[in-house]
Length: 414
Image (cartoon, rainbow, N blue to C red; front, side, top):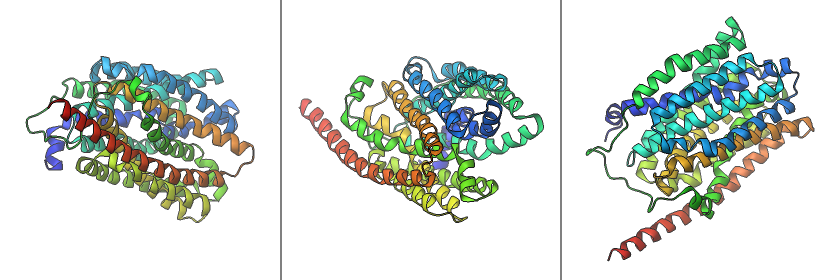
């Protein structure tokens, strides 16, 4: 099916998922960090102290997600939207009203759980369940919502905050969520997608349906997590401490901000490329390669103070981000099936959120202790290279296991 025809024929479900990932921005690190300077100033926090607070709140949200995320298996995507969007809006209002550190922890918890966690969980689980042969393309389109948010929301936030202040900008965001985002997404998702006669047969399907308990006992699952935690950990760390990095390198903040546009463009391009590759080959086969550009990005950023270094870093980061956003949505239904996909994804998203929690807190504490930040980034690059080797082993074992399971099922029918 031509890509444009696919988009047109499935516009309501793709756009609904796109909006969910777009408005997850209010719980994403890049958006929250736009207020980091004001938060540290008003609460009298160091980089390390704010990093620890952010880590604690995000860890709590990750733990909560392992059971809150199960609701996507029990309720329709439209019903889940009506639950999580008002709670995300409540977190945005609470950010504007907070004046105590304890309240700040609760605010970040709400934003992370219902923004980064549940908005993305709802979109990716619904899309992964509704599409089979075109799952890669569908997820690549839905995932672009987050990239669009990264490109648009920082500019809007800075502009609006300059007019009404950073606290009232969070209130304006809450109004946008309740008045615009929720009604539109619910209307789009109200009718769930059913398989069509024109849908092609999928090239790869899970040999059987796994429960979350079985996934936890699968050694290959833990091997995959070694690599899957890297992009959120590294990206969150760099974005969270971007002001410190810019000061350390002697770059202007405008220069570093300009490189975000390149990252967004590369992410969008390679998310779509990865979607097509997954539909042609499989998510499992794409698994070993997505961290290699990220390894190069970290090594360049760690070693070079040149003014072009942020652009090389952001370009390569965009390649890995593009591949990972699509890959992570398509991989799990391909390996473990769709019957318990929400429960399984909630566990995986929780692990990814956990990695985003550890990044700012750990690196911020090391910075306070005098550990070289470029040295830390270099170690991240080496980790990506080692993780790619592990993922190559996992990918081959997954393909062999699936082939054995299919053969065993065929023999049982004879």
